[in-house]
Amino acid sequence: MKNIAIYTLTSKLNDLQAVEAAQREFLDALQIDHDFRGSDYHDYGSHVLDLIYVRTGGTEGIFRQLLPQLQAHSQRPVMLLTSGKNNSLAASLEILSYLRQHGLKGEVLHGSAAYITSRIQVLAKVGEARRRLKGMRMGVVGKPSDWLIASDVDADLVRQRLGIELLPLEIPVIREEVDGGREGALVIYRHLRALAEREQLQGFTIRCFDLLTAVHNTGCLALAKLNAEGIIAGCEGDVPAMLSMAVTKVLTGQSGFQANPAHIDVETGELLFAHCTIPLDMVERYELDTHFESGIGVGIRGFMRPGPVTILKLSPDLQRHFISEGHLVENQSKQGLCRTQQIIRLTTPGQARYFLTDPIGNHHIIMAGHQRSLLEAFCCAVDAF
Image 1 (cartoon, rainbow, N blue to C red):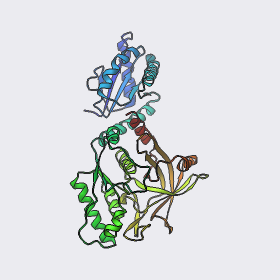
Image 2 (image 1 turned 90 degrees about the vertical axis):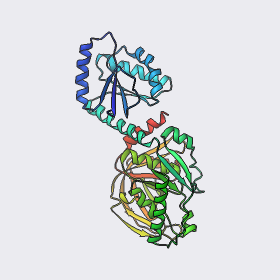
Image 3 (image 1 turned 120 degrees about the horizontal axis):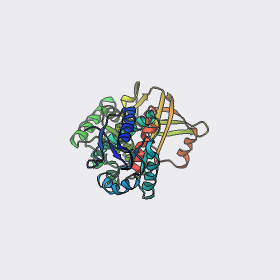
Image 4 (image 1 turned 180 degrees about the vertical axis):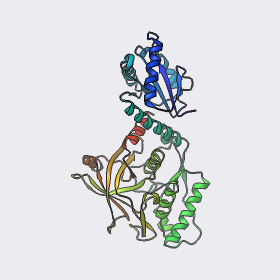
């Protein structure tokens, strides 16, 4: 089965031969590998992306009768594909208006062949990401740190909207002796990796500050290694940050850097982000230092390649999100801050005010590249649930 399916809406008043000739020209120009289903909707909703190709005008009533069947198979937004010929664009706009009036989501895909193809590719990536998230098991090891007072999540809501199962777990008991340096940090890594394997986790977040008193070391190196190995690993028990990292991973294939702003310049849109760990697959090189707040254990000072970046944060209730593109100007190594430090200049400087007026917690996720359109498409899809 192909990942993209195309279904059709056609008025009986139109010349079928002319409609099919226009269809061949239109779909050939898109060059999208697809499964053409025509008017047979029995498997609608079973593909990564289902498109309804409105071939002619006069199809609004047909769609209205069809809608209950579509909703029985899928709650995703309705994607209406149209070439604009035979009054198909007018019909698509009427159908989309009807969906909106009934509190349903949808989109009309119309324009140049290049634009439509690009948009379909983005939507297919979103559909594939949602499929990969469904059934993902993610652990909350310990519980969220006491200072995360605005980051509580509802596990049932996360399951409903993202398909992710959240599992409350205990911090592993480490009975062997742990020293305060790299070898001790690697002991913690082995225990956390074993926990992930035993519980069949695709990721977790850990109340890592408890390790400072329990074993006099930190989880910073462990999290840096685990993320690089494909296990999403967040710190401080921050569940919304972990979910944002999961979305980053399945959409872009990249690890995400969980960090918090340490300085914000709203006039220039320049921000300093810092944290004591960063995935090792995100950096060109790294150094080992102590954990900043405690001065013990192992912290990571990572140096990421300067260039385009994107910042993401999902809200605890998954009703809001923040996405901003920018440029990593430089990595710095100043005293008095968490060890990995990044200066990022936002593409839209005015977005810096968000952090001072309406932030979604303190931790945000930084990833390489400009990913805004892909992330926005995903968040719009999540909003439909």
